[in-house]
Length: 481
Image (cartoon, rainbow, N blue to C red; front, side):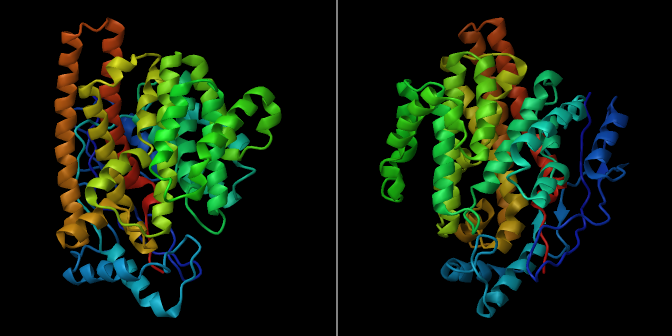
């Protein structure tokens, strides 16, 4: 039986770079694992010792709270910080190319202190955490892939941070604990690619709107070039872009460019590939390998999901850049797409060598399960990344939006979001029950039922692995200057 993991508070320390806020590392990390009725106690402790470079010790604590710098409850007066921020935050965002002035440094310092006073509420996923035993071996192959695709286009520091300190392979190992080692390296590479995409989608001095549009174009061309005459891919891209015609000048002829260049790419092959961006080139490798292993029906489904999610991730970056503050309901719907979780859920069919027809995949209970899973994962991410995003002046975060809507402190908003997560976990359980009943009513084959079980398992593992990963990865930590 797999181990149940609980976490004691992490005490974090500060770093100073150019007088501004940067990511911080845990100091004297007080992590403990409570392992109940486990036959794999030793292996689990070793796995997390490798993850953190620390020695893990057992504890009876059932708390998963992480206290950032202090244990003080968020002061009511901090509400005024985000009220001021809502009005005056058109030119003071950190980390996306805007210049700070003396005039708004006080607000920056207030946000930094509010971030340090933020407390991550208790949340214990229903499924126990489980690590893939073949992780380290698979990661050796994945690192070679990462070096080949990204080392030349990323700074040494950024490459080191992403692949050796943020450790996305540990997320893959927890999300897909039962994936065969022969395909686990693909999972690591794909999740790492998603991280690179998410990072590069941010508008900054190094990534202008024009560059991001070109990156979008390249990725969309790669997807469509595999099936240049497929009308469903074209229609799906039109649907993704059509709602943005009034917001982006480029959107008016974007689809036509993609279709034309996909046809050209199909004809020119490797000669065309010399001109696409490194991130599109890396995705092309993953995409070609995936569709070579899976039926066309799955490949088109996966391609459409990627079209939608990649474009939504770009739009989220644009909204952040322009300080667009959506409603809670709008944000929740858009977050499912921009969070880039759905393609990683659908990927489990490839990893487990199973296949579900579209008719079953699009069934109501399956979509309920996927939606609820994406909500839990994305909202958990919002809680963990909130301090860092608060310091950066980013408003597109569910904690911030709930705080604004409910007129409550950030800590209270985080507790509300956590309660919403618990409700969504219950929805996942109910959807799983309905999905199994769906299998009986529609007399699904043994193979299809196995695919359903893999989906249910993958959704549960995603929640527990993502929560554990967030609690440990330096990617989600914050410091005060």
